[in-house]
Image 1 (cartoon, rainbow, N blue to C red):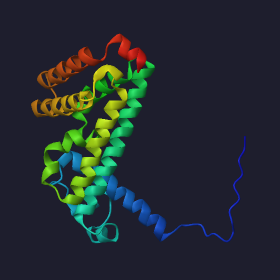
Image 2 (image 1 turned 90 degrees about the horizontal axis):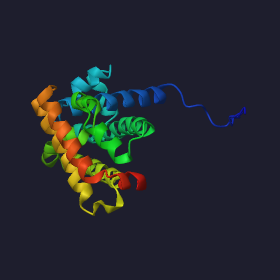
Image 3 (image 1 turned 90 degrees about the vertical axis):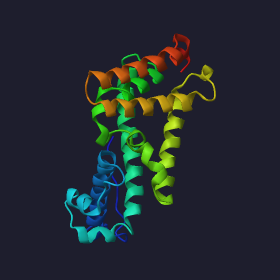
Length: 212
């Protein structure tokens, strides 16, 4: 089927400076989203982000009123991108026969997430730093925590109980942080394996997988 779209001649095509500004804005947020997971909130410098985005330091305030606004945007983008990567990998695992919960746990506590801090979940990368941020940044960061909890509620079996999502999410985030502290080695990977086994043994029963 061929779809033909006619443009209204009275509506101008947006091009030129505004399009370039939007593209520049996206590059800044992408660079900051990587930096915030790699370096933490305190490690995100405006000059460094602008340089990584291929832009001059002086152009920053054409995009953001403050560094805090940049941090908030970076956290939102990091959460969105991290979730998209999780969903893609989860879909692959479910296609291989894994239950939704098993796919989530094995993806979140996988070796790729251990080493992929820059592209992974911002909650595990930044949880301990959130309480010390400004109200603007805390609000956005807390929203990412709530969304992570909501995502776990959707894959846990109905019999898990009302507190299971908090317990499982805490285990996921804490285990990943401990594993990263120990490093990309047998010791760090053993932490991930132990946490995976504990969660799946408790919640991923055969009848639970069938009802998910």
